[in-house]
Every structure is written in C-alpha cells, then in structure tokens.
Length: 179
Image 1 (cartoon, rainbow, N blue to C red):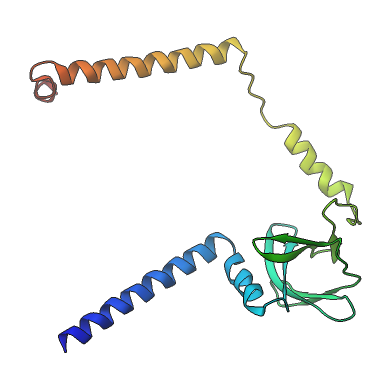
Image 2: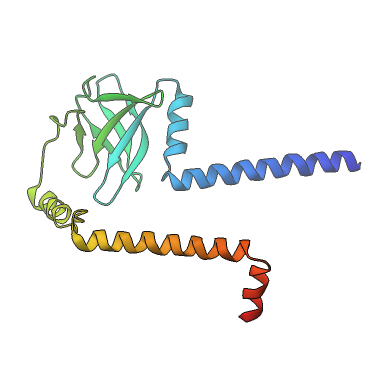
C-alpha cells in the first residue's frame, strides 16, 4: 500500500505544479495561453483575435463564418460581428492565424494600418504629447559624465576595500571585531 500511496502523492504533486505553472503563465500573459490553445485545438475552425481596447490589449478566439464575418466576444461576453474579412487582415504568428481588431469601434486593422478608420485625434494626440514630453537624457552633458565617473570611482573603491580586507591577515575578523 505504501508504494501506491507514494505514487499517488508523486502524481498529485506533479499535477499541482503543472496546474500552478499554467495558471501563473496564463495570468502573466493576460489570458493569451488559454485562447491560443483553443485556436490550436480547433484545427483551423477558430482564429486568434488580438483585441485593442481603450485600456489594454487582450486575445480572444474568434470564428469566421461562410459569409466572411468575424464573430468575437469581448471581456463582457458581448458578441461583436465584423464584416468583410479577407486575407489582407490575416497575419500568421506562433503557428496560428490571427486578426487585429479595435474592439471599441468594431474595426478590423490591416497589417499596414491602411484599414484603420475612425482615427480620433483628441485621444491619440494626448499620447503623442506624453511621449514627446518624456525626460531626455543627454549622455554628452557634463553633469551626466561627472555622475558616471563618480559611480565608477565608487565601485573601484568598494572593490579595492573588499580585496584588501580579504587579502590581509585576519582582515575580515579584524573588521568584524571593530564594528
């Protein structure tokens, strides 16, 4: 009986480790792993949809029907139907076909962004201004060079002190006794 119990504990622990690894990886990739596996298991019946939302990007498994309409659910389980899907919208990555969609405006996005309509300048202008106003670090600035030289000298000093402490006779114990 102890051999069977040990085997069950071993198999159970492997299942728990694999399950926790899957859950962690799925959490880190924001649900990509589950949607990717749904598309791979469907063997061509489903397509991976990269959905751009107002706040983030997420993945869903969608279906293209015979009338070339893409049906995909968003995070609130609301079904979005997008018409006129052709091969210019479909990309291929990680062994699966995928389509990029702006889920808030129900727009298909081409790879060259020519199919992107409904560009709202008030939303994207703020993002452009924020990216242009990021702090600029000039490496040729004398203050930056002085900081870099100070850091290098400090590092060399710490390494020299550690070397002298370890090479002198009883160096580490002398320092420990004096503290």
